[in-house]
Amino acid sequence: MVTKLHLPAVLCLVFATLAGCGPGGDAQRSLALDDCRLPRLATAARCGTVTVPEDRDKAGGRTIGIHVAVLPANTLSPRPDPLLILAGGPGQAASGLATFAARLNEIRRTRDVVLVDQRGTGGSSPLVCEAYSEAGLKAAMLETDPMPRAKACARSSRRAGVDASRYTTAAFVADLEAVRTALGAPRWNLWGGSYGTRVALDYLRRHPDRVRTVTLDGVAPPDMIVSLDVWTTRERALDALFERCRTSPACATTMPDPAATLDAIGRELGPGGREIAFVDPATGEARRMPGSIDGVIGLLQPLLYSPDTAAMIPALLGRARDGDLAPLVATANAFTGELVNQMSIPLHYSVTCAEDVPRADAALRERALAGKRSARLARLALAICDVWPRGGAPDDAFTPVTSDVPALILSGGLDPVTPPANGETVARTLANHRHVVAPGYGHIVSPHACAPRLLAAFVADAGFDKLPGDCVRQLEASTPPALWTGLLGPGAP
Image 1: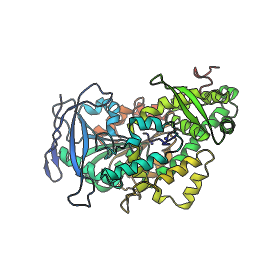
Image 2: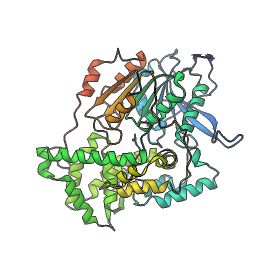
Image 3: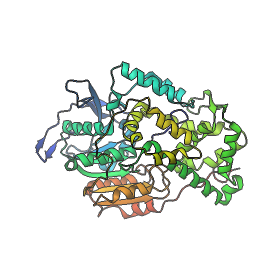
């Protein structure tokens, strides 16, 4: 979900002030901001820390810092309602989306863009343990069993006095309200991607008067059970890709039956697997990983998030069929390695174990565990919560959100985890909405093509009358890229 992966082992955006007149009177900023640098961003941002209780139910308990980064508006008189970026995962730090946020030039002409790292991620008192350090993550990507690392991390967190059960969506929503108050913003415009849409919807539920507009990209409805639903939707997406290959003359010539090919690869690897040697494209380092069908599935599924990488799957399977799994392993590691480094795996566990797994009834578990390719991975997702500290959620957290706040909903037609049907689900109770589906795009539409211009028009007008029709038509007419028949691209041998 932006993304939010269980990989083989884990497996898968001139400075000015923010001030204005709010509903209760003049809003004053109390948060001190200093110059700072964000990952892969050439221009300076302004950063600060808001201190909040780790456990709001425990008076005088431990406090944590919430990292806030502001990309200032390009004006000395910015609008009082900034754009807030809510990242995905759960587990992705918003500061990792700085390059996306920097692309929102039209919005930044008049408004600040704010990135708040969710508690437990990035600069917000991250849930750090040796098992998921940079070196630990590198090793974890090559393992097939995530349980030993999860157990070790849970133990080390307890020894450090960290209550991992308090790192939930509800706690983050309360943190966001503390940040808004500290910034002195009477309201703000929300942008949420993937799991960030769950956060945006819950903030809208709790603080409707503080939201001017909300953009939901790659919707995770409140009742979605992330830990299990993603396995089912990703299997469907992989089956749809295989069917597209079978009905494409060029692809079918080189890969007549991709599903059968994948099954054959699994049989060849066998239950014990064998080591696969490959070269890490990021470092040039020779590496090895245990080869198993679970590992291959764990590598294939993240490639589905982008149509450009999904288009490579037939060619990669073709090489694997011929005994060479190295291109698949190297490609998947290149695509997923940076994403995993942006993720807090412990935060992912804290959220999903508190909010998703407890709601998984017998029927849903049966569907997920019946998956022909990812049953074991789904089983591990459930088992981890047996050893992880588990919090809770408000009783209404998973009910539909009813609102008339302007809501722009974006969906990629090829999204393997938050398909357009999810957008339709939340739209039913959002009275003032527009749902734009881009058939040729995957998970998260906002950074692509003309979408930043669409976002700018929506935020500027807080409505849909001035949306650029040419952009809407361009997105709605988008088509997926041609499937690769060889490692040199479409049409290649």
